[in-house]
Image (tube, rainbow, N blue to C red; front, top):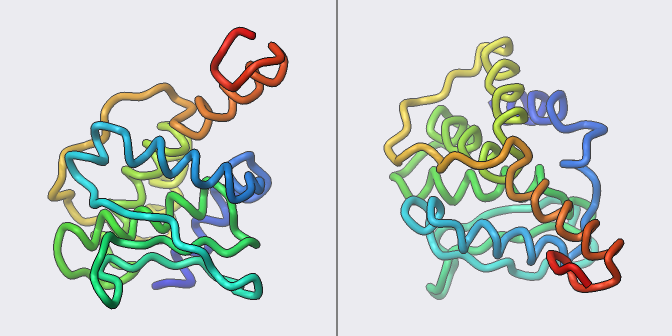
Length: 176
């Protein structure tokens, strides 16, 4: 199932802005926007972005880290992009709503909702169609659906704010 999920993600995100590297600072910014969103606060779990070793090739999410503390997402320096963050957040959302196979139907439902939040409704619809065409089913969600958001999602809003800030000569989201 895992390789089929990765294939769908690749078909949806390859050669899009969602797979463009945003760097560690960008990942922290975007993760902060998710954590601060009302929908995540009502449905997700507290998490932190934890460092990985430089040579780490893969990202991961841990709902219950050894030693306690908040859930953790570890993002490889080779995967610092919105699509990877959405995937790892989906693991945390699915895990916070009961034990689940890592890439099973509950994860698929979670990923569709997190992609809608992070990447926007258009990307989520594309992903839903791709999962359906691949014969991968999502379970019924046990959490509320994401809040309505612009089609571009949190990532698009974050990126646009950075561009506007860069062109205005000020901080992102300011007019100068």
